[in-house]
Image (cartoon, rainbow, N blue to C red; front, side, top):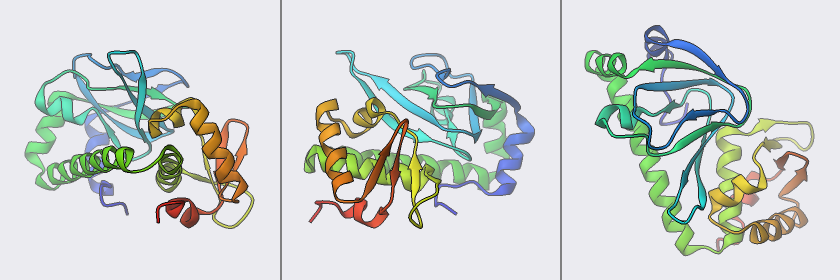
Length: 218
């Protein structure tokens, strides 16, 4: 179990307090700047978390999947949504009204600690990514983002043992790595030439997780 994962009992508490909803590919689940009225537990499918800078550049902050919460921070502090969340495919989730969510945390200390731990892990990940964006060239950042997406949300596919498909567009991958489309294409070509990934229409297959993680980091 991941260090920020909720237990089956904690997931059950959230299921009991919310209602099911579905989103189609490309549909906005959470809108940046909107009031925070609820928390969403992703049940199936993947979403991307993005923000738009003053100059109009869209950055992909994260990809979230089953068992992860969306919007919990703004529901706790009362501020507006800090990012937009968009469905990458068909997504199903449990929507918990903000007031019910806060009452659950007040009544169940273990759930409150689990949510706090999840927020802390995400903040650490965010700090690490910011540091890496300054310390490593674009190609290494692309490899790191692909590795993390494969570990957290990769789907097993036919091919070499352990091969994982990462369903993310080149534009989304470039945004997550903080690089240009041209640098991304060059990096993907190098990774493919070294046998670490296989590029396929609509997704990338990671065939060597260890090699991808360590690529040009020494």
